[in-house]
Image 1 (tube, rainbow, N blue to C red):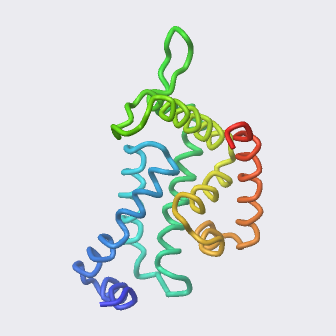
Image 2 (spheres, helix red, strand yellow):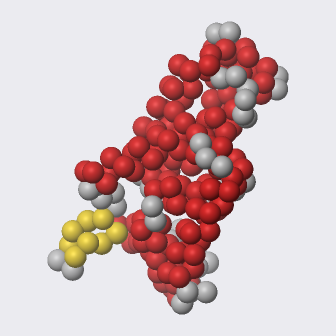
Image 3 (spheres, rainbow, N blue to C red):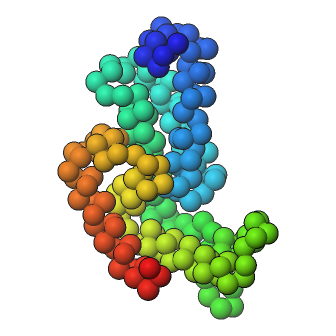
Length: 189
């Protein structure tokens, strides 16, 4: 059954068709939420809420855009809401206080590949830390566009559709985010 037929069947109340839709999008949705939120727990919450909203509102889906775009719009809006809540609550996901100041716990996770040499591991850790810092400094929209483009491989038109804006606005936002990333990573390149 193609996606349109699955959607129409799910709209008629076919639970098996809805489960097939969820199975076909569950990993990409979870991956997007984890990449944007940097928290497995928050990403799982967004994942559940996104599919709950899809279930509740599938009857209103009119095929004006692709299902993928509609679903990603829901997920990206939920992620933006979560990011805004964090800023209000000043949550810190992976940082812990030490006598030397705040330290990101993730930078001390061991590299699991045995072939990685210490120098390469150190460089990778430094680069990862710098990228994480730059991503955290971007506006929520810049970060979302950057990650949707570079981590999810989405096209600018799809990003614009998912965020409820134009392709040109997504392109400009990506340009600003990329410029900030390049400026911050200049000595690594």
